[in-house]
Length: 177
Length: 150
Image (tube, rainbow over all chains, first blue to last red; front, side, top):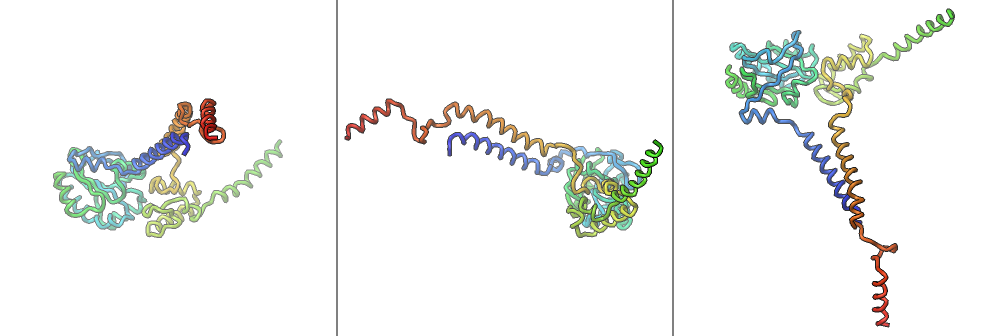
């Protein structure tokens, strides 16, 4: 190899490494919220005012001072159907403490969401996150995902995927319901 | 003048149905530009109950006489931007700017470093024939040495 090629090879190699590092870092999922919850830091739950499925606007901030489980769901999501009875039972428990399960629909037509609620006997309120901004704030990767939020508006437990009975029981204890 | 006005009006009237016909859309025209929101693939290749529901929704909107852009706008209002196969262009985001900046920085670095490297003797001097460059004194000494073996 001619010696003039050496700096060029070094520079091209550095460029490739820099692009690779940028690609890997950019593709990595954000786990800030999960890490904070695991470290028992109780990070503040993101809040946004969104259209409510029943009409008007709503926000998690409306429930400040009350225990809440935020559940991201969609009518086309099979695990959402499976977990619906558990969440409805959790909602009954939370209502006794003036709290709620707060649904947030993602990538779902409002008519389909309402039909899903009727079909599965869901009585908890839901917001429509059409632009996925709240889902991004909660660092969701899909549906269903659930977040237990205590009376101070802090995230204390996360379920990435379909909730199980033991997670719901633990979440209810942690939010004081 | 009046005749010209009447002609223009007649032309405009004649053009209206043609424009309307141009704006009419169809399910195949829309479904290759939107995604199945549950399966995350283009709707025209998606096979799922949700894909069927979205196709039904598009048919309903087409039957209402909406244009393709209006149908897509309705779908975005229901499902969000992710329903579009090609999301709205938000300009140059970090995903484009950072790699371009890295490549430009490296080109600038090469433009700066390579000439200096050459000037600093990075390239060994060579004769036109590709061999080492030899001074006249060295050539004379070589000839003298060779002469001793003659």
